[in-house]
Image 1 (cartoon, rainbow, N blue to C red):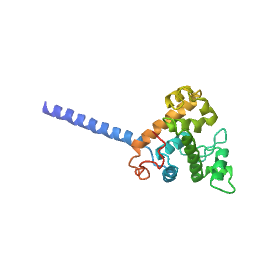
Image 2: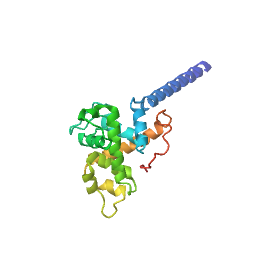
Image 3: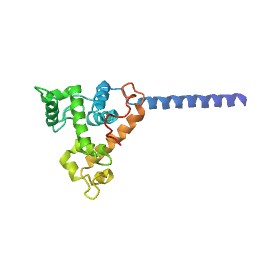
Image 4: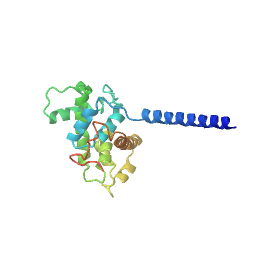
Length: 205
C-alpha cells in the first residue's frame, strides 16, 4: 500500500506544518507590543538610574499603557501618580503652574512617577533588595512599608514580603517583578531597550 503510506506521510507533514504555524502565531501574539511610550520610559529611567524594564512593568501594571486612567484615589495616568506626588515632583524641578491634569500628559506622568519610584528605591538602598521594598512603598506608602520591616532582620526582603499585611500589595510587587523579568527577555533586542546596559545607579538586584 505505498500510496496509502504516502498519503499518511503527507497528512503527518501537513499537520506538523499547521502545528508549527499555530505555535508561531501563539508566540507572536504573546510578544509584548511596542508602546508609543517606550522612548520616554527608556530615556527617563536611564536618567533616574532605574532599570527601564522595571518602569515599563510598573506602567503595564498601573494602567496597561492607558494615559487617561484615573484611580479611585485620584491617581492619574500611566503610572497612577497622585496629585501630591505630582506637586512634589514639580516643586523639585521648579515647574511653575503645575496642575493635577498635567499628570495625564504621558511625559509629565512618566517623569513624575519615575522620580517618585527612584526616591522610594533609594530610601531602601541599605536592604538586600531595594526594588522590592520600593515597589511596596510605591503601592502602599512609606508609612505602611515601614510597618512591614522585620525588626529582627530589617534588610531582608523575604522577611519584609512575608510581613506585608495587604495581599494586594504582595501581589502587586510579585506581578511587577515577574513582568520586569519577562520584559528583560522579550524586549532585549527592542530598539529602545537593547542598549539598556547597567543603570547609572544600580538599584535592582
